[in-house]
Image (cartoon, rainbow over all chains, first blue to last red; front, top):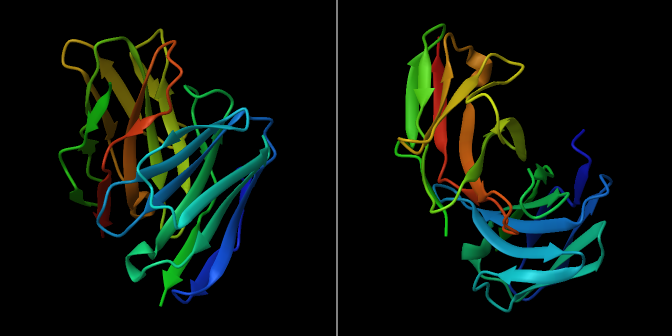
Length: 112
Length: 114
């Protein structure tokens, strides 16, 4: 039990669908992150939130839309995705930005 | 800015043999260093970390890493690996006192063979 949960664990969607990924942390952390992990590629940092404010957006396409309503919850809204967006999406949290990160189990996304 | 290099994308090794996974970093300031492990179909888990003090740090499952400032390295070692150590290993760095998220290396796949 890592203290960071992600739902759903698996998601299959068509290119015209709209779906959302959810991440919740029960660790009292102030920073939360979204990563994309594709096969045979390095871990890609997508978004960083610190005290609910977005501090990093690493040139992520607008079809990915993050939302952080409070320090415990992080969402990733998906719309009109492409097959190349199929990947494992990992959420993480840390007490402060420079502290060790705790990861959730990930959502395996398949875009048809 | 910081960067991390893990030169070996895959390391095959036989069970009970020793292993070293290499990690080199680049930074103009002092850093904190981390090793994470990812088992199949799971998220990353912290294996060990160097913040300050002794340059040799150990994990509960027999791994150790040594911070070498002159060589800007933080190599991960285990004297005798098990099949269950098969996983992806990531090195990460962040500047001391900086308000920056961790920078991860590209990962090394450790494949332990019987």
